[in-house]
Length: 275
Ligand code: MD3
Ligand code: FE
Image (cartoon, rainbow, N blue to C red):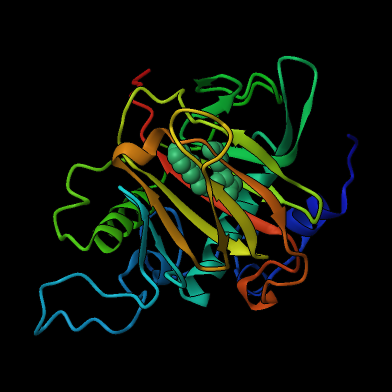
């Protein structure tokens, strides 16, 4: 597979609304939110909008919330458009470098159709390292604290339990970009030395997500559509289930998300590694 690819260019170089008005670094909007320079929408609890903290101590409820299997919870439409735009802008920044987004090479000589960039720890089949040794050797960016907070809020709202995020400190995220043709075969994620939940956020085109079982990469499985703004949390027994993305539905995303085409997926994880 050779670059440039349409999806790669769309994702890496498109100047979306959030990045277009940012004064400083490309792809990062100004405003509050600490040293990362992100605006408030991602960091603050604005998703949903039906929550009134004054009178109610329970987590925000979301229409369409569904437990697909024990510990596997789908929350459609969790991210607001503003949050999606900020995440796209942040991911675009990481996709440019220090280790640019790439089609991961597989040990048997294959190349993934999905393009991936990592933060916190770099994943290469099948290990985590601090440097992107299969790209350019650069050290990967810090995992930002605002993303830890986003991950904690995701657990609270997916599990409808105010304590579900306590002690959850994801230290890596894999950011996957899918063009119209990209797919991800059935696999397990086993490189993490932790059973902590995985938090998945989808932006852009809708995909078919295939959620299988822990024993085999074949049936039985459940196919679910993941659309822009959807949250999916995989914890408990679902953490080590086989899963994949058999197809993306081109043209189903709203460009207001900041993505003109293709699909972006962010998965936060706890590696269980230290150095
Ligand atoms: C269930 N990503 O990066 S997200 C991956 O949409 C990956 O890009 C897909 O599978 C994507 O490894 C699916 C949902 C997901 C991610 C990680 C999991 C589900 C998971 C790890 C364990 C169990
Ligand atoms: Fe996976």
